[in-house]
Image (cartoon, rainbow, N blue to C red):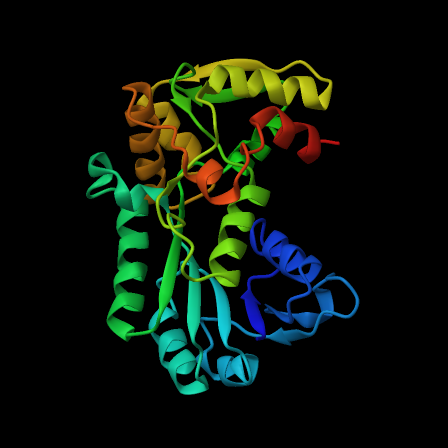
Length: 272
């Protein structure tokens, strides 16, 4: 049963591709430009772009399962193309924020809710994977010089390693009946942002200091990288975490049968 991994160069998609390949599962990778894919030899690569529905028919030919990133632009067209192609199961990388009452109205959470609604309405068999805080959100800290700008440094979250997110997605692909894969997905330990910066500093071997931001300063900072409404949504998540509203869950341990990788392990790998 061939699985198409859409966004196979992404931080989670690449791990999904690798883990399926190691399990001996037939896979196909889709990227916007196969010439620059940089994927393992022997993996079939096709050009596909959710924003260009005309590329989906060929990419989905002969595919029975799909790993999909949540994107509002093109999801409806994808669902139609998947139905036409006879796709039997879609595993969607969504967000744990859709399960948090405190995130109601949050722009990021509502985006993921919209995508989930599109797939639900399409009538395709689908399974959402819902990580809350991805460890690789911290990648930028090592690129910001010696000062890391932070709102609420003591806010605690439980970041999850992308390999573990992928492993939960693969569990859902290999056995669509796997219980609990759509539950709120986190790492195994709540860590303050301050402690996360310390672990990044240890992994990189260079000192990092924290530059604490006000909310208005944080809005300006985040708007350098994303639209204002998304910057505001990120601030809402961090502020909720500062109030103790970013939980740690047993989902990864329950699905994978082991403890999730730690943030320290992620940092050691990311900055090796």
